Image 1 (tube, one colour):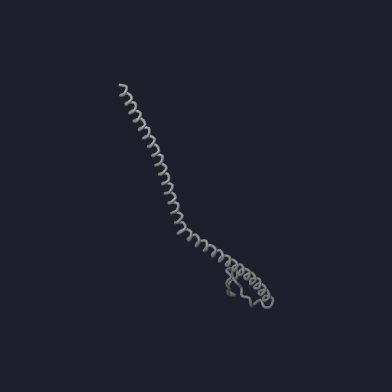
Image 2: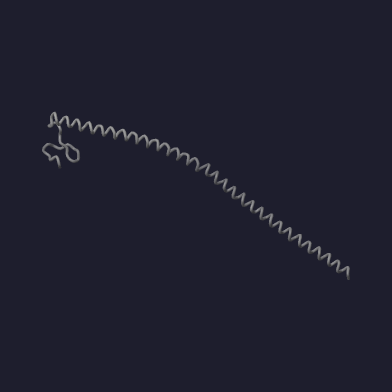
Length: 132
């Protein structure tokens, strides 16, 4: 009977060892699979980021550079137009001053030569009212 008990103990120990080994193996396998899944997710995210970077480099960067170039050109053109406008305004001020001087000189010489103007700046006939 002792032999049967010893055989039963040995079989029990072998079965227990087998189950413990199986549990440890399963636990290790689960950890390995989790690590592999995390690694695969990280690689997938990296691939997505790389694809987005490539899209930005291929499509958006050239568009952005073109727009920056166009903005620089437009700023340059606006500055030129402003400079030209300032010159024209200065010339206009000078011409107005010169016109006033010439009108004053003509008034002194011969007032009849100056034709009157209406409020809108247009010449009026001598028979029309100047203030009309």
